[in-house]
Length: 389
Length: 230
Figure (cartoon, rainbow over the protein chains, first blue to last red):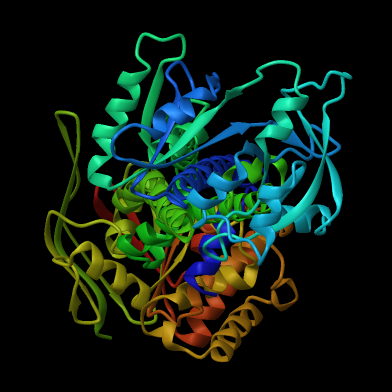
């Protein structure tokens, strides 16, 4: 028998209590693993595929509000702007709106694929085909693989925003290109199709666009160009807000609000609750073992060794709960990556840094919750513990 | 016979609030090696405190406590813990076994201490088996305390006390929670350990029947020995 055997047996002397504690720690670490990983994915996603000399122009009210397409040409004339394109959120889904949503934009094929050529890697001739084909669509490699789409295939892509004059929501699109990202792990779960095709078939919002992509001559000109664009449209019915690409992507992905703050608060609340629950339970668990600890000390177990054993129990407890929570969170994230929601975030898998922080937190939780009972076991007087006075 | 245990002018006082209660005032005691001593006396006479001092679980205010030539009165907590693990086997009235451990694992506990920790696993198992055999409980090695009777639990406690081959055994009312027949069995086992293995045994008891199993009885009253019977 070793000290670990003793720690293990003491921890599971009341399996139901220990089980419930493990479940509560598990839930806290599951929340931590999921939320922090989503936040990291957001960060990663907003950092990927951005260029320092690219700006995004959106409606000042909110990027979901439209702007006239005429703005594109006006922006192109502003000093410091070298290229302009536009893209509009389509609210795309395939067959089932709840299960198969993904990122879809209506774009100007020529300018969009030119400006974002670093993110959209097409095969030979596919860009030209996209420019020429009115109902053409280019789809990300991961998306094409998911639904088994092939080049030349006509696929019905529906919108949860736009309705056609016949009341239908689906536009038949011909797959003319399948693109990959700049890096193998870049998300390729989006599709892009011709804006003109959307514009002629929709019942509202004609000649309006969602956002304008701008390339400046140099990153040093970004601020000046952004100010000039917003000044150009100031006091118009469609005022604009121009930001760099990274800021825009982060804002786009954080539509739910200040996720950092929300995540920090939720995780902190979960850990505070666990700290209280586990801490008080361990204190009472050690108190009910007062006599046994007195016996161990009588037999010759030194105080520091008893302290280590009690701390070992609390660390083992939080390690089990934390490990399970992080493990299940990693599995769920893997599953979520393949879901419709995951498509918006790209790679959702748990980052190694999140796992490491989780493990350190589990150790800290074990240390903090075990400290009071461990110190009380260390200081426990044999005579008082055994009632031998 | 030379003194194996020697207490000289031992003073012990407890403080409760503002009140000081003197338990022993210059108590002196000698116990030779291989003795089986019963200590009797009314409640509050100092029996338990004497056992605490002899077992190194409490410290005297002044005086000397010497075991086999080793002075323990100045030892620190850590030194006393190591000394207890090496030299003393404890048997309590209410057995005080670990409920989560089997009989064999309870007996093995003292082997997790001192130099015995370096014993090979098989040797430890052999020592545990031997201790359980001595108390005639080999067939109950895998049972937890709640699956054993009171007498069996006390035998497991005896096996735990002797497994590390300590120099002496301290028994605090070892039969106080048992019926007469079971108590006699336990006392016979203690007598056997004293006679056949030469263990020095000090037993605190209220029970004159139990004291008869000892080689001599010391009567304690108000912190002093008032009578010795053999």
